[in-house]
Length: 106
Image (cartoon, rainbow, N blue to C red; front, top):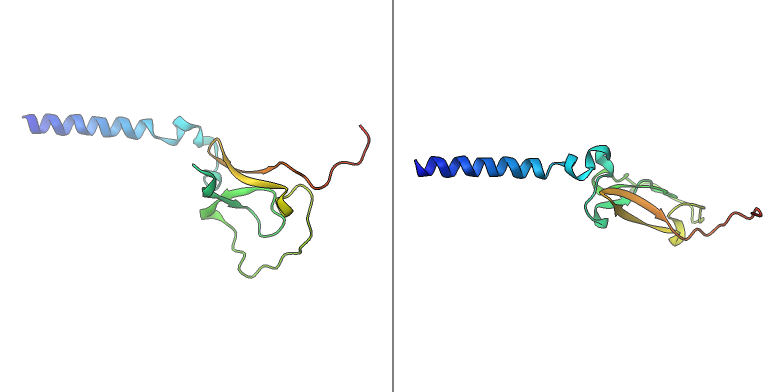
């Protein structure tokens, strides 16, 4: 009797844990699977050359046979213009220091 009670309580606790840890409870349900992350290390550039976005490393592009120019393109991750971060569970390219600014007067 005690054994079946213990098993029942254990199964209820497992079920509650699964529900509590579901992606919907962390807002991940709205984030595409290829962009979901938990830490910055989960994320990589979304393109081989002049990337301006990020994806989960499991969805990284295959860049083995790709040659890129060495130019620093504006509003990309080129030349240290930004970094890749996991922001609220989503892989994001944070362009924080653009090399090129808008020359038009404000």
